[in-house]
Length: 97
Image 1: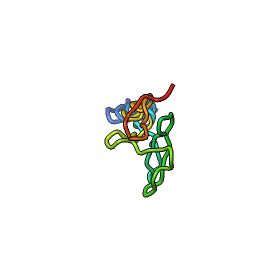
Image 2 (image 1 turned 135 degrees about the vertical axis):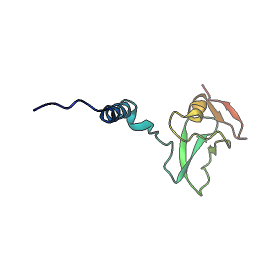
Image 3 (image 1 turned 45 degrees about the horizontal axis):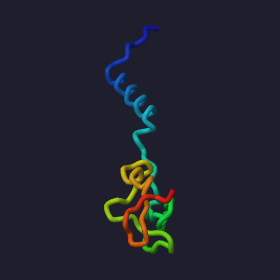
């Protein structure tokens, strides 16, 4: 039985599938919090947590400053906050050693 040569569409499809497998299935990014939650930072300390929408953070936790909220693990703001936190006045300060 004669073998058929791969056609351009088949080669293209094979390339796309390979690229998706090598890049983690299309670049899916893990969210920092569940969809109905928002991230908060520990005040004058390391760490972060998530709070349900409509609720205020507990004592010792604060919302991230507007425009600097991490949304996905490893995104610009997640990396930014890796060595910073907020103080009791909401100012950005270095994390304690």
